[in-house]
Image 1 (cartoon, protein in one colour):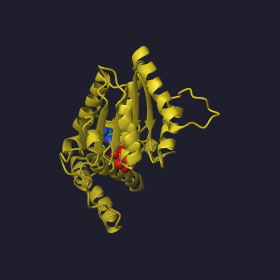
Image 2 (cartoon, protein in one colour):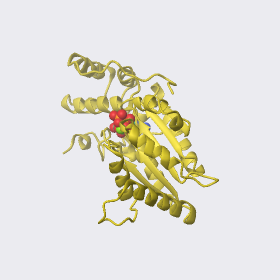
Image 3 (cartoon, rainbow, N blue to C red):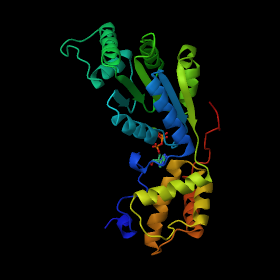
Image 4 (cartoon, rainbow, N blue to C red):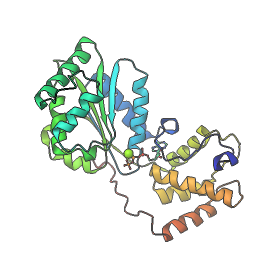
Length: 289
Ligand SMILES: Nc1ncnc2c1ncn2[C@@H]1O[C@H](COP(=O)(O)OP(=O)(O)OP(=O)(O)O)[C@@H](O)[C@H]1O
Ligand SMILES: [Mg+2]
């Protein structure tokens, strides 16, 4: 039997996958999500969300997709890794992923493909009144040529709105890349930096995930002092919270206990630090954008 079933869960509470079902709406995540949805609705073009490693960008993008799926006037595609070596590869991937009809036997000149893309955006956006959205995760991996393609795509517009909506999510290096291209920076209609959780959010997120995973007992699985230890250790970074909680639950079983307390956490964190695997240089500067 899996460890989480032993503890009374239906599902794994602290899986590291970006499952929107386990997405706790922190202040930061809610602000980002709501604003992105508003910008998309207004078809204003370009949203950029920055965040340090493990702050929840990919999870946020999954949540966004879940929201867009419920709206039938959206056509969207997500690129998980935009490491395209050249312009041709990037445009070809856009053509393929948006299912744009272009004679697949011929090898196409970039110009033809751009034209097909523009025609598609016009057809969907104006004739069919759809909102075509491209979401790019790991956007810090976009190279200059790819950013230039995106800039050109953002130029496709009617008098009233942009034909392509672009949502970029990336680590902090994305910031310097964009700042170095002023006519790209200038087009950002919504920018946001995801910060880690505060203490209360850390606590609420842990409780939320436990309940989502089907834990029904009235007993508090993580004591208040355990959560304080988790917060100090993780500094509110979601992935760090998840990892340490997962470890704590495994310890619980090993030690045949039922409540994660501060003492248990101290022991786990002590071992983690001793092992030399603990990252101390957390990068994020508040309001850095
Ligand atoms: N709002 C949230 N509620 C619950 N869990 C979250 C939340 N945000 C992030 N997590 C969890 O934290 C972990 C890391 O999140 P995610 O992978 O989205 O971070 P990231 O910013 O994309 O990281 P990276 O920079 O490494 O790509 C995941 O396990 C995810 O489930
Ligand atoms: Mg990610």
